[in-house]
Amino acid sequence: MNKRKITIFDTTLRDGEQSPGASLTIQEKLIVARQLARLGVDVIEAGFPIASDGDFEAVKLIAKNIKGPSICGLARANYKDIDRCWNAVKYSNKPRIHTFIATSKVHRDSKLHKSKEEVIAMAIKAIKRAKSYCNDVEFSPEDAARTSLDYMCDVVKAAINAGATVINIPDTVGYSEPKEFGERIKYLFEQVPEAKDIIISVHCHNDLGNAVANSLAAVKNGALQVEGCINGIGERAGNASLEEVVMNLVTRNDYFNVEIGIDTKELYKSSKLVSDLTGISIQRNKAIVGENAFAHEAGIHQHGVLSNKETYEIMTPESVGWKGTNIVIGKHSGKHAVAALLDEEGYSCTPEQTTQITAKVKELADKQKSVERDDVIAIIRDLVLEESEEEQRIQLVDFAVTTGSNFMPTASVKLMVDGEMKIEAGIGDGPIDAVSDAVWKIVDSSYKLEDYHLKAITGGTDALADVSIKLSDGKGNLFSGRAVNEDVIKASVLSIIKGINRAYNFKTKKHPQMG
Image 1 (cartoon, rainbow, N blue to C red):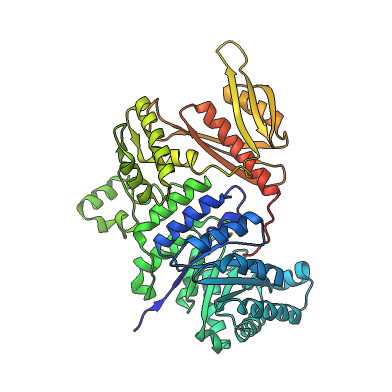
Image 2: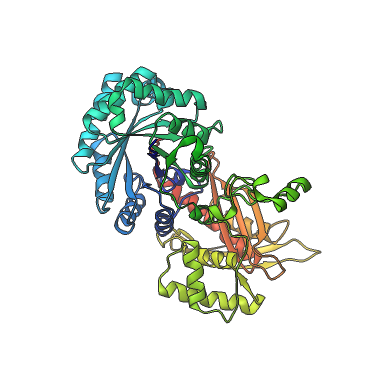
């Protein structure tokens, strides 16, 4: 029996990046896109071009620079969105326009205020507009999992007749159960024979924890494309975790009998890169890429693994590119060693940036004798991947802290805010609390620090301090910030400022919704 080819559609840069706090700069998006191309994904949904000028420029930059995968942009079912999308993706040698409109009753009645017939007419019109620009057009009936089966089939049939080459069935709010979702895909093929001549795709959210299971159930019932995000990031509880979908299809190929074009040895690197750049940590017990994924603590497990790895390991760490060693770079290491590490980790830096990183590595090595892989990645984040000037509305100029065992810690902070120098003093229970107090007085006291996490990157009293924070804006949105420095207090200030910058930028960035 011939194996079906499953298209892997990555939406980390669109749906994943819509999660507040996960915002990436244009340069960071290009770095992620390069790694996704190395991973071998078939389609990169690079963004939502109409959402903002930044999104448009990011999609355009990726379309111009990334070869191999199709480069896709998202557009609502209207001419303005579709025209804007085409003007961004047209630079790709394999452009795709992905347009959508909601079809469930609750969306039609409460959001669109449109009849069934009006929604179908809007979908047809949008698809034909997109088709006038490029042949590869994907259409999604948003909230398909809560749309009546027969109406969903009517919409799909109309979309295919209008020229859609891919029909995506989203579980926009993560409502479905695996058996139910699989049967929905099966019913679609039974009622719409034309569906066998195109690609049926699925896009599942994880609100009930079923995103991966629902995606796999759809594949088992004939779907030929799966959409997901690296590390399962995304709005609310996230999207289907791409690495989990991939390793299910590979590890249990006896069950699925499909083939994919993914280089699984790039999975761990992709996961680490996305985590580093978004600041969203990977839980230790995360399947496939978590720190504990290949760790065995129980004595009986350890004995079994030492005797035969297959007793408790159904895949090897090497199969997903997991590296158990952390290479050491010293002050005598040159640019070639640093460049090789950058290449291994998926970062593409200019010669000037590599020189800058090497100089910082040598400076750090003078202080702590050796610099490990994770230290170098932290240096990259601080030196190369800072937000552009227009995105850094707030910049740290200077700070001073006075503290001791018998008096209240005090701090003074000088910030540049939208080009204006501002200075404030603060007090607190400790030096970091005092610095934070001064920062809040300068920016916006409505922001609240919800989480603060400090760790030493590679251990030791001279290790780099890695500080990650989460702050809220009082409206239910959380924003993350992460910074690294030899000075714990400076790393803390920089991480808070990064979080505030993301909050400020989020206010001005529109996020049209699609599941």
